[in-house]
Image (cartoon, rainbow, N blue to C red):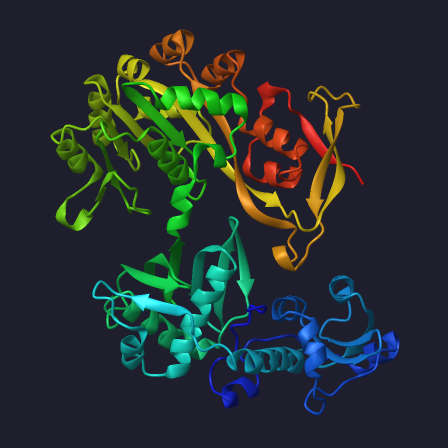
Length: 544
């Protein structure tokens, strides 16, 4: 499905009446006369279907433009904002045609975009190819009977189908006073898509809650649920979270594709040197290996890849996670359940009585979990876990701050991987771009100039220039010097300097290497990393 239009899926009367959202004043005759552009009455004209086919709904929605008519190699384009010259450029590049701009009332342009694109979309948006699977494998038709309106069912199906087609990791449905906003997180960035009318918010929330087997009558408390989808023969797990806000229930759906769990170590994006060192770390017989980074930085993917790389039938691997995102073959996985007091700490105690060789703890959140993990490592187990720290060296100070004795941290932690995700340059529209790394921060010019790549924007990448993600890493392997520094409770910066002297590359340095390789862009690296004063990476600029 080419378009991302989700708007105006209420009845046609709702789609045709004035929109509740204020779209600004209409263009006055002075502006029309000044620009010399023809004026179009959107209540009278009827756009050609051939013209609508040339411009995707997402582009029309983003720029508030409507293709009206094709005459030879000229496309007549109705615009809500005459100052949006970028819209003309984007449509010109997208269609390869000469653009003849026309002016119209902004409110009527918005209504026409929603009405025309959605009417075309509804002809095919039946929800075919998507099946909701409950634990009893109930058919989606049974769930449709629970919903009051068939159009609401089709809308929710469409939201999920398009999110999967766009490779979204999360879907956000957020009610506000005069609008309902739908956003997809694609490659780590939230993208707003055309949204349904505000009055459909309660119906959409109820439909999603029915699918997730939540209590649709409870709107005062947060709820968590799960939907199992089958799309084109593959199963997708959807984790649903609802939170009451002042304007209604905010819903976030995380889409978990089991195919993501099949990442191997070589698929993560580590450089050859770091990959070799990481393989050695995860092959150790005991100790703690930590992966750090913010939510959504790929920590779970890295841990799953490590577990699959070291899995052998003679080894017993047990994990405790919140939630179990993907099911791994040959691995015993436990789901945290706070309501019955199955916490990380309590679950970890039980795991130690299961005679494991390798343990994975989804996250070390508190001192109790940290203490048990340390004791497990001291008794001959290899323990994997995650922390939320800015860099690899910060993991040591984080454990010390939790109250773990310095000698225990020094003797058990074998290595730390810090990571972030950056967007990949779209291979379909990538072009070379000069990148200049400006020296070592001492004020001198003449830094290294390298040839990077950037995406120009195409249909494959939704005009963003990026498609997919790749990790950037810093791998800290603990040596004797670092152990001494930990026992001395040295600051994280001192530990980091010692690790760099031992050959550790920082995340920013790894990111710049990927810029040189044409895998990502400088903007992406700067977006997710801090300036490393001690690395000498300095400022970096993109040439014209």
